[in-house]
Image (cartoon, rainbow, N blue to C red):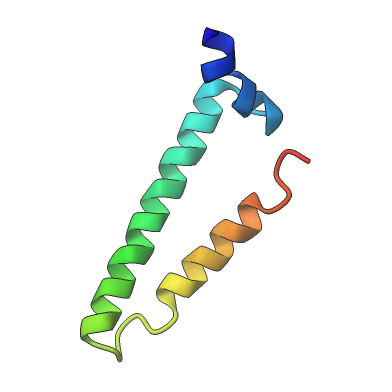
Length: 68
């Protein structure tokens, strides 16, 4: 049960538990930054015009086809 909860998914993407945790924490931080840029852009449209979409595109490129 413990292995299924904590180890199965990281193994599917060829990572240890801690490698996967680091990746996921960095990923969430970048998503938070993208959300902040989008929020500022919503209020002041001339700022961060492509920041959020650029971050999302980079995250997609890093995760697309991962573990296949």
